[in-house]
Length: 456
Image (cartoon, rainbow, N blue to C red; front, side):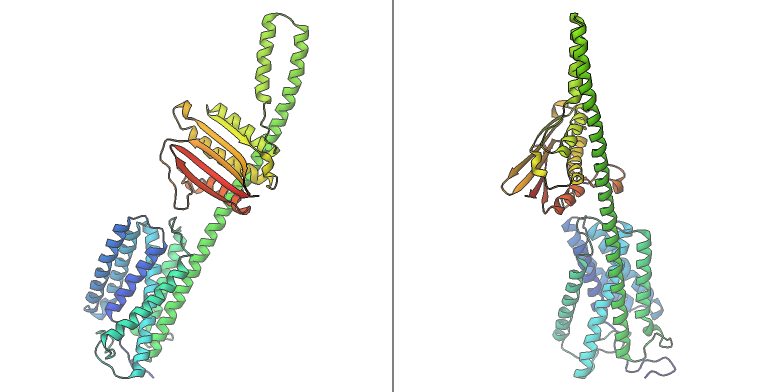
């Protein structure tokens, strides 16, 4: 047991600087593999190679510093890890700092667990040599190949396990959403974890310190593991909250599309009744008034009424309303819209899903076509047909500007308020997934083609 003077009984050597540097570097590499990387692969690899050399140099330089500058050395190591993450992945400042904090705790955990296992096995084999760190005494007189073999096995298993659990916690197609509150909480947890895990090396005269060598290592590993687990749970909660917010936005858009459909349906019914009444009135007036100029004027009026009374007849009343409404919108914007649709194929879909799916698809096409300066190129084509065991929905529009999509095929919105837009294709995918279908997007010779396959 430790004495009242604060000394450590059966003191064991601390983690060698080289092993700490390798652990920090591997933690950075692991997170570079699971997060969304915006930097070219060549830059990532060059940053990783240079980062390993820098971390090793910093660790050995910090080992030569006085003990009271130990914290400064750790800050230099953290800063180097931040540079690796920031440059290697192309993250923003806040996102890079958040990922670095996660990597730092993981590095501390892996290095601590490895050295705890090494000292435990070494103490049972017997014999201490001089491989250890200058601040922690001697290490074990093992052949170097044995030490490296244990390091390779332990680090591979730990980093591999971290990769398995973290790859589902981060998106490799979108930047990690890092709010100010999330970052502050993460930095706080990281500082607390680091402080508690190294407390016994600073002073053994605290209620949370250990006084026996192996006991201190156990405390450090346990605290690092708890810190990593807390940060994992925090990220999982943040990811679920983000997904819930996105789903809520999609559902709100679905409801908005459905309300638009209901309003359009009511307007179309009113216009249809009005057109029907006007036809009868025109017929009565024509029978009473016979001059040629009056007849020509009434004929023109009748054509105008007929234009408003024209409706799509696909075989599905919901789709009829959507197509009729969008046809008029296209006419107002100088867009040629053609639709060939067998609405009977949508018999199993809810009216809300039909309105949202077709409304979003056509709205996206209208938005793209309306930007074209040449009216001859403002073309939209819609087809709804059966093919084998599938119902096929295809919406095509001509485009000229470059498209901005992510790795999942989702279009990135061109609107400034990206948080409230860009859910069009995501909403379509959401609806298709509810019916066991899938969505594909392709471009060919300036034609943007959105295809939805729904199993019958």
